[in-house]
Image 1: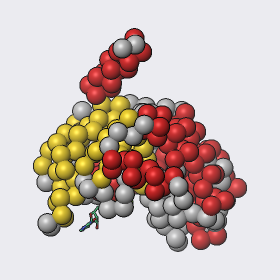
Image 2: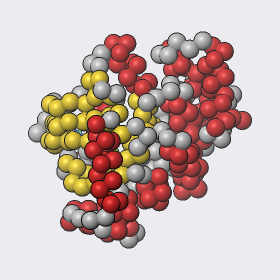
Image 3: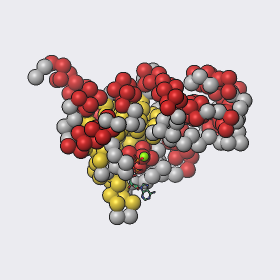
Length: 261
Ligand SMILES: Nc1ncnc2c1ncn2[C@@H]1O[C@H](COP(=O)(O)OP(=O)(O)OP(=O)(O)O)[C@@H](O)[C@H]1O
Ligand SMILES: [Mg+2]
């Protein structure tokens, strides 16, 4: 009824038209399993989308299709208006444009923290050595691990390693960052230091897709919550709407399980 909701609808429509990442009618199977079913999702520039849902619902697969770690069977995915490239240098560039942070940090064990953050800049972006070094140092400072630059990943805590992984993705100047349960392998006392870095990124306007069960983060940083179950987007809403008034039985059931333990 209110003018506010009308304005919001107009903004939603504009957001869809200006989608930085747009998935249209995406389907994917793993053998007999229809893991992504008719997925339509448009992520606007600067938007922070939190994806939640039960184990096996397809959240990781959804993320992985966006940087083509998984191919799709039908439908389309565009980044900045262009279909995702299939191979070669274009694909390497896509992987740089779409930063990905996983549960396991995947840092190169035999390279220092600084080298980890410089590598992609040198190889994929062809940044010169001095500029890559400067950028790596400043990003490590920004995520709070500047003093660890010359150590090897195994010498760092899990929380520190994950912040290095974030710095490494940011060093590529990505258009969008995907986070797949970035804190779920961390000891509780390290979760917040990683969430704080992500919160800061969100506040600076980074476009982000975040699979997480950290509901505090979803409430404070997300523009939108997307709830998946059985390969489908079952509902999506603002965090306030979703957490206070989930519409589907699947979402109500899921929330009652995760909020009550
Ligand atoms: N490479 C693969 N080959 C076959 N099946 C797969 C593959 N990757 C995932 N699956 C299956 O697809 C379904 C969705 O997996 P996915 O990892 O996307 O779920 P998820 O929502 O991320 O779950 P979780 O919360 O446990 O991480 C699961 O049933 C999983 O076993
Ligand atoms: Mg997963």
